[in-house]
Image (cartoon, rainbow, N blue to C red; front, side, top):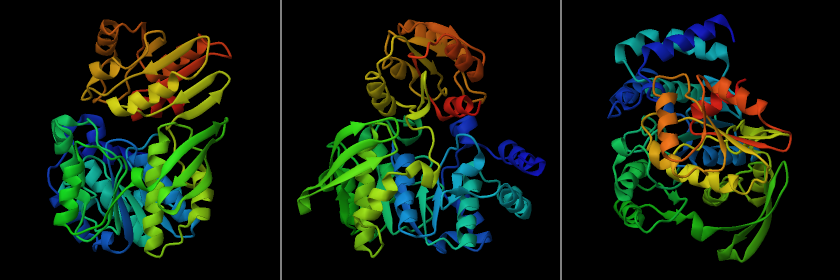
Length: 432
């Protein structure tokens, strides 16, 4: 990391309100700042086609899969996701390659006066930065993941050719609403008039919300669960193997994917449906392209932190699951891991429903509690107290590094370790 890049990151982190570090106080509840930034930059968001992706869980994995399919098809593909795990530049990729440190430094220096005039949040600034990078690179298409919600998310200044909503569950209820229909309405804010949209997981509680949007905005809707069925047929250290069934055409395809999480089946169905819709629009996203892309998503896009096997002996897995629905899926797969002793390194941010999350964790693991080095983190002393009340037994550590180190010191070659609870815990753990 160059000195100039480090200084630039320090400026962005310290000068701009940042949700991932400080919470909802960093959020601006309208699109004014993003529109002002984009206007001053010459409306870069209008200079490329885009796919827009929202949802409570799975939107990052789904974004990377769709980007991988488009890259495999030969399109110059932008990918904007958040938060990052190891390096800020992960948020802005072109054909899987993060923008350069020099580009980030140059953009910030060129636009420092603009940033100080508009006073955007960190997320608003990085969205504008991504749009500018994609416009300058003349990408054929960009896959844009929302940060929070959809209706008022900073990314919602684009008019995509396809919108995707992966699923709806409880998260950020203090911002998005306390019922599934209320949360769905916020996510559905990315649906644009005449632009087709995909729902990844159909739910009775939210179905009317999306039906109303389809009628009001006169656009076609596609439900991934109805378009595709998946059967998991095998797994090894590198891939999981699937049969993909397309009921409408009575076709069955063999798939393998380098994404090992069992929960990825939901996201794969969504990505398959997106590939179909894009194919109908004239994109070269046929099944052969999809099969090649899904077998190498991590290689094509650099995706990390989703049932990420850090080592095999002992088995160390990192997963960014951080809310009730996400952790339920992660811990279900963790329950299938066979090991004499199972360890869990865990920490949360303070605005999650931590007690609900802790109730999901198994009582028979050895716990290593910690907090990430961000102001938004739940202090480890409080986590330890609440975890103990939930019947979880373990030790509190002053840092993620110390927690991981002590866990590994206690493990034999056939034991297993899960690192989870937030992007920030995983980021600090795998950066070592």
